[in-house]
Length: 350
Image (cartoon, rainbow, N blue to C red; front, side, top):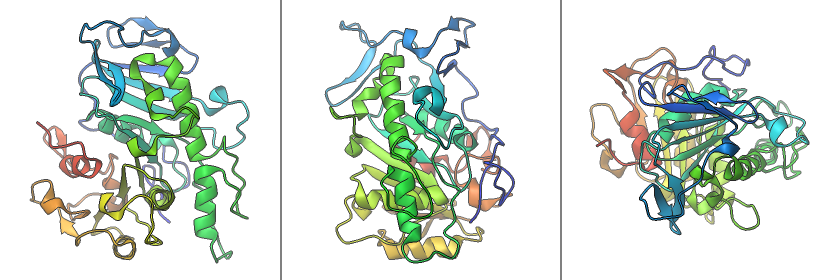
């Protein structure tokens, strides 16, 4: 199993951040859970809880409403939140690296939350720049830390499925790991949204939760890379997500009654990835629509293809298909940006 963002195959969590065209202009604010931060204009900002929420009048400073989150866009900028799991919930015992959330109010809010799962052994910091990129199209984005470092070894049987499910939901289904609800990926995202609903009311993060503090899955895109892509596929068979986006990965055990239909499953893989054949086989086994279709030299939406492939040369193909140090750049844009927009349903760059 390959790791990303750090050295290939490493288990250091991949701490190298991408450098590229994303989020290099315009104001931004990074806000911690309890510490102050400095905005792009030099203003000192307290915790996100001190920010103002959507205006109650009709001044035109908010978007959304009953059909979508009510986002305050009166001060357009990228909001980025560094979220310490222990500060959000002192009961957690595992996976305690910083988590991230992103919302870019320079883009029109799309009313969808992207729930992004990191690859094998990666921490959320590995994919922070990918989160910024997605937020730049108008999505709310969350990147939880969860148990993605397990290995079934010689256990066999249903270990792969059972262990993924426990890591995702906290349900006691695995003999390999012990993950409480608070330490699960889904539990972490619920906790993050509950916190941000109070800490950043201008983002209306709580819109993605129902009255019982469960995710409103129909407004959530589940996405991930490598190990996280496979987990996204499994998750989608049992939760009714809006869309599934799999970078360098796939899931093959898709029942006929999968609750997220395969016609909203999208994948991107590199032909030079050593896992390419396995990824293709997983897509085929899942029943994903269409055939592998190259994005190279083609225009989105690539014939409405779901199985997207590329052969653009780069240093580490497996990780290049998300924003990473190996993602190819042309001019001031990522080469794969049109494909990413297509998979996430963001629409073309105007």
